[in-house]
Length: 237
Ligand SMILES: C[S@@+](CC[C@H](N)C(=O)[O-])C[C@H]1O[C@@H](n2cnc3c(N)ncnc32)[C@H](O)[C@@H]1O
Image (cartoon, rainbow, N blue to C red; front, top):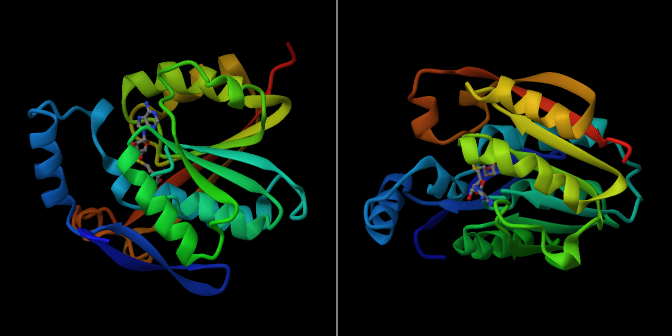
């Protein structure tokens, strides 16, 4: 795939390839031209990289998932980026169907390529979905489980994502979010608690340089970070 490269991530006792963008800087320059220089956090294609929260929550779920491995779940991932977490979920839950959603349609080819590399393309599919819009009717109230990794980095996300996730879920569905605790984390948590019941909150360590994370994050000088993993249940209606 032009403009992309393979990185290798240890997951479930194997090094597995994941396709991500080759040069984020070059990609961003081209994208800035495409959007006429109007590059804001709300419309920035960060998803072509693989972010620490997705790796950490995938690894955590191997032993801490709230469902039985054999459960025939309908799972939706919001802001899926290149689809790593969706592919990981497909390996952990061999009978689950996973809809990997993002509003950047160009990410569809990454999700497809990665699902093929991991042998899960029969159960992981990409769906272009923008959580600022109403939930499409075919998905309303259908998901057993909604997940998102690093999806609170713009004020619009705080406003729109929690009610969108709630409308996707079945009455007994769960929402799992992984967040690198940037400055919006506290506000995001307050808003999430208005829509959901917080069931679990754990903090996981992430050793940036040991995780094979992209150079520009390692070169920022931050070598360790914490990722918060939050699990929510629906409030009774
Ligand atoms: C920081 S990236 C994280 C990607 C991936 N979850 C990971 O951890 O590697 C955030 C993702 O959210 C997506 N996103 C942002 N706003 C969105 C919206 N309104 N609707 C759907 N996806 C959105 C972005 O396109 C991007 O892929």
